[in-house]
Length: 397
Length: 54
Image (tube, helix red, strand yellow):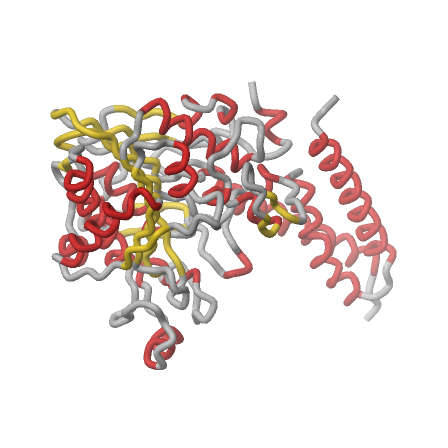
């Protein structure tokens, strides 16, 4: 048989372009905003660009949900999704927005703090693009499972070495896209620094009294199931840890090391003398390096045979019985938010009180999907609110 | 004057387009079907890079 190489060549080119288009279309699905359905506790929806206008029309702009209680009190800022591949952080923040109410004071929630991190993922780590939560009525809610760093299409190119502002600490180049190395931020800095500057402006304008940045870490990482605070917030952190123990939840109380610059709790705590700033970590096997099969179930179910074995050998820094399901991790975060409010009152006399908020036991009983609102029967396509990189030059008005 | 990153990005985009042109030209001229099939793995990432225009 004679092969016509001209024809096979064109076929190879055609197949390549077809694959390229399909993969591109698949990838850009993550550029669309997730459906978030505010619950009865949300009194106002703002955007981060209301605080830092340079973010308007970019993927760095993100929704800011304000939950105002009937009684006056202090202001609590909850940052979820600083790292978009840490679903216990953004999941807890989403439950606050969709389910919870505030009785006293004000809670400001950013469920997708680093929105540009939600617009791409780590395909070479086999991370899923989306994860879903089934609801009791049979419907499900789906959210993006993003990346630890911002989208390189917005932050491109990375430097060889990232020099943190203003302390000049050196990090690897990729860290210039990590929002939790970009604090306190600056209006004319890198994209992540501009997002961090937006959070700084939010803190300034809203006079925030307490801030928590919800994170996750791999099971073989020493700083997990822990609460770390600015040195000034140590009394509050210790009291919150004791309060957690009342519910049989062990949590480490740590101080944020002053030589580790760019973190939200340290930089915001240094900048605002009345702010109690903290970071917390739960256990996420999807981020771990010794995990086995990685799919859309691992971040939710938290069950992994390799980590079972590592736990038997004593290599992990947290209890592992039954794995680390998302309902357990979000349950810990919900209990922690309540513990922090109790501790804030003890330490400073300032009051924040939730009306409706699930406990750890509630999450373990009902699961995560129970606390999300039902999706509309025919959800509208959110479209592209903003495009990254050069595309923005063509689409921005 | 556009920002420096836009200029660098534009240069990368031109370079990507040129590499794609070379690979596609060689694929069409090739007399080896395996070479043509393997070209798919080169064309796809470069074409995606061109579509995204970082």
